[in-house]
Amino acid sequence: MVEIAYAGATYSCAASETVLDALLRQGVAPVYSCKKGICLSCIMQGRSGAVPPDAQAGLRDSLRAEGYFLPCVCTPGEALDIGAPDSARPFAEATIVAVDSLASRIRRIVLRRRFASTTGPGSSLTCATPRAPSAAIR
Image (cartoon, rainbow, N blue to C red; front, side):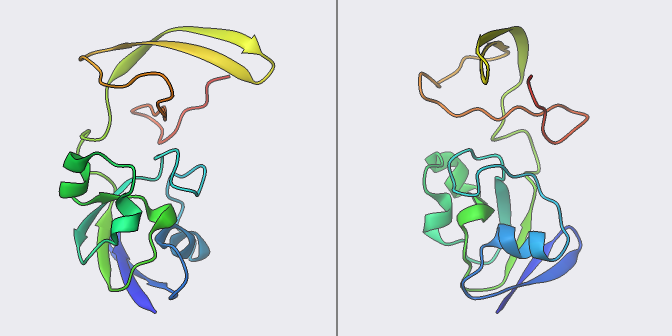
């Protein structure tokens, strides 16, 4: 069992447990969605301790270098001090221009980014607002 320091408290994480599952089991409610390392909505930043490389798979090199990782697939081998991202680094500011219903459960969302984007077809997107950690588009 290892200790996870998060938001001013310390939590236990069993040997085969992910950081996300350990936090959820102990009543913490971090933002997450898929729990498979695909959506990136749970991204956190390691402040001390070694983040396993598997927990950074799929992240840009620049984010990995800054300690960002996905707690939903992170099974730590040693104590970690973690936190939500300190800045808007892994995020991009955008304005919703249009939301079109393509089918009963499929929406096309047209965004206007404030800065140039390197994303393309097949990219993942998680929406957040300044007032809430996650926003649903209906």
